[in-house]
Amino acid sequence: MESHTVCTPRQILIINPNSNQEVTKRIQKAADSILESDCEALVLNPSQSPNAIETLAHRKIAEPLALDLLTQHQGYDGYVMACFDDIAIKASRRFLKVPVVDTVEASISLARLYESRFTIVTTVEAMVLRHSFFDK
Image (cartoon, rainbow, N blue to C red; front, side):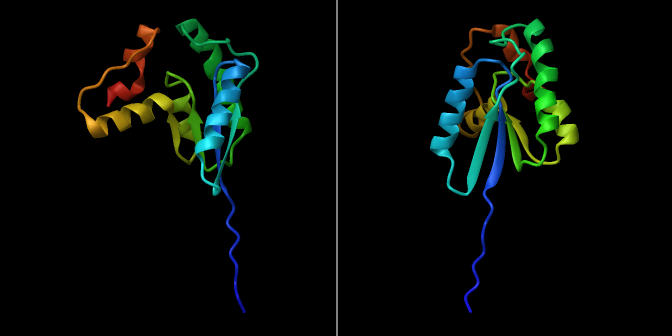
């Protein structure tokens, strides 16, 4: 008798912390195009968040909304914060017991594999040195 194991796809929740639906759709399309069949992603964004997060005031609005989404959607195998900031990372790691990464942290980790020095190009200079990843 042959035994077949049914594998449940790994589930990743990706949060776009701004309210820009076009960006959210693009993130979903990108995730769908690169993930293998054993992994599925859902991309969400808070509707009341700023359309773009470019200032500390924007961050103060967006962060609690992103945390609310994470709180409401527990049970995923991993989480990604899709933004150029560490919005909700520290707080979410305290209550989610699975990997939580942000796109900057992942990008910097990859860059450091190849070079000890690298450059970040952004239009929001104030966000670069505030990122918690530079505290390490």
